[in-house]
Image 1: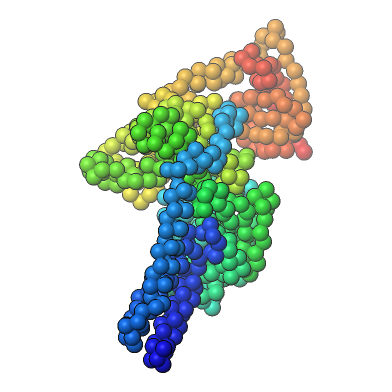
Image 2: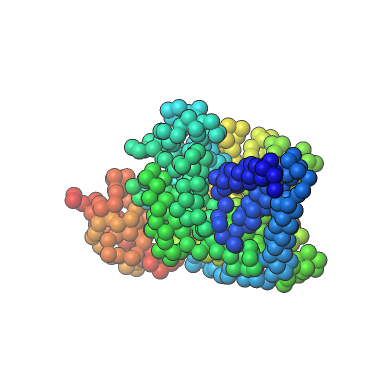
Length: 572
């Protein structure tokens, strides 16, 4: 072998090794046989090696040796990847994909708390949160360096509901210049008051997805966990408002690459970089978002699609269902787009979030495979536990509700928020807001899911709920209560009256047609007391803890309700 040939091949090998190290730094693949990224990394390196060695060997000598070896190596790797990918696919393992998660059947009446007071109902969708958040970031130092994430996850923080989003660098060069000072804040939007707050941190966020160098979150984690396959990073805060990233660690359950499910979590302190790995059952209480929306929706979608095999999902489609999330994410035809008042088409997001006793849940409707606009129910996918429940509820799918809401004000070109399913008097009900061009809520709409032709609109949530209950025939019973209150049998000796004294534990105020009624519970008393403002004007001063003496008689309409005929407010 001549010195020129040897030198040429050494140069080619050195260049190939340098490129391999650069691609490893750039792509950050997991060195795990179950990671497709690792296989594509080797294919890329071998391809570059073939080109480089071919040039070098041809330049110094026509005697090719290493080039064909690399070609054979790349073909072998590619074939292994292709065969493994095929035997890991839904085509071969459809029923196994369907069984990756068990979707429980939930009880709507038990799981979804009935709403009786709309005064502080947190109706804030992601679009509104984005508008409010973009205004809050205006006070941020070096604002040109940063951008807000479009993900406004619903969280429970300090016993209130918020939309939370993180701030990150705009571009590579912004991140490079900001390497030394990091990301100084994040944004919270209160779902009830709709007030956006820029939360400035004492110490800036050091590790984030768009930071550069060793501060890039994925690169930082890859050094610590070189073989782990990561899921989608979730931004969250603890009870003190400290920022963290929740990183799912995936494991393969089908073939070499398929059926990836969450195996554990890495909790990363975004400021210090401290990492704690924990099992799915040992997440800290403050974590609201551990499982990503896409991950949960993909599991649910595969469950509904592949129960009877792959070819059934394509041909017969027997018992095949789809999620609104899956197909409403795609904007429909341009013809339908032109027909809409707003010109935005009906490419709805396909989901919303709701806070339940079990944590934050993503909700979306389940529809037939024909993509019609009638739902057979909806699912709640828990972002903390990863569990999914199905609630049977035949009626309108979300986009139908949005079109119905927008049709109530066709002349104003208002657009609707994405519907949220709630429990009103035991009935599945959509709540939406109608927004003007400035994305400000101008009115509210309630639509019965089953009887979706029943839709009412009001300027406030309280007014909308009252109209809705009237439209559903539920106000008749309430009217009877008002009539019973208004016709107090003050002089009817046949009505037995009682007296009780105690402190108010819970207090609610209801206004109907200008008349105010107070509904309250006393401490250590499960009975519900209903009192008209006519009994005592000083009731306007009552608060929880106020000591009162009450004269009452038992309602003839419902057990456990006491109609107040006289009330005195005692000095505490």
